[in-house]
Image (cartoon, rainbow, N blue to C red; front, side):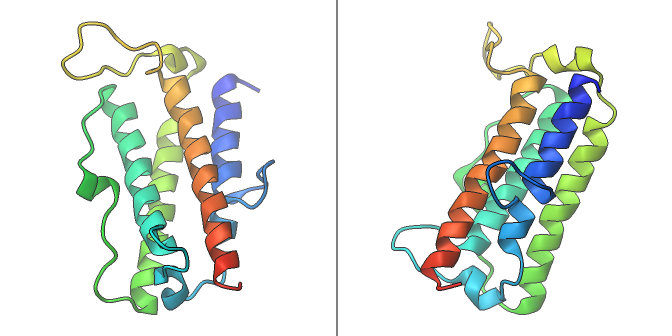
Length: 163
């Protein structure tokens, strides 16, 4: 198995598979209603819905960075989109669907990469020196870690909701 296939596997495990650390991201979202997802059971913490919107943003940001090999600043309003005013089941399911669709598009892009692509540098704007932290390899591993970090938050929010 090539390294890119191993990373693809880890992205899929973190998102919807058998993650080593516990429930995958999608498993943490199972059987939630719109009102549960929109709730704020922990003071000053994001809701599950807000986390899903944030996660979708970052899957799309990683997709963009893989495609362009450049970073672009992510505005706070884009990084943490507000929950919609309409908090019904249809909108909640649409938010989860958009996360899944972004993940599937990302995996399709990852499938086109080779092991050699993993060392490609993601250029930083207005920087004459590339950051050694900004390679495709680090970007993809970072996304798997990001998904699991927030899956853990979602599980804690579920517990706070009594689920």
